[in-house]
Amino acid sequence: MDSSENVQLMGTRNYIRRESALHSEIEALRWAMENMLQHSTCQSFWTDCKELIAMIKEPHAWPSFAIELERIETRQICFPDFKITYVPRAQN
Image (cartoon, rainbow, N blue to C red; front, side, top):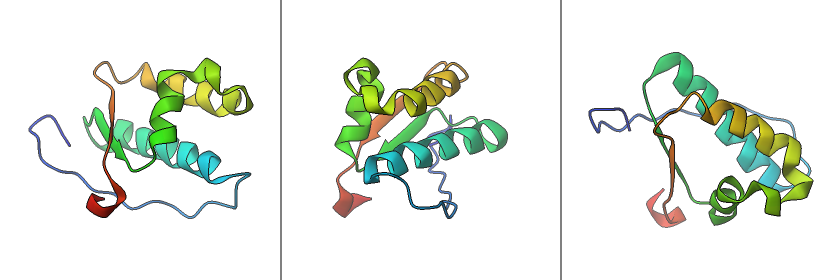
């Protein structure tokens, strides 16, 4: 959503197969964050992946994703009001 609470939707790009589904989730979030920095003032992101939210909240608990999570943390600096919210897949 943008600052006026208007829903903003974007498609994803086609990525090569990653090591796991979680790696793909992180890559998709990173891509979304980069695009929002270029095209919107969006600060909120929604996901149907509870593990992704856990990774963002406690990156040290996911050492095998350290490089990917470091990239997310670097981009989070650009989002002073960054928020990631779980939405059930049926509502996504």
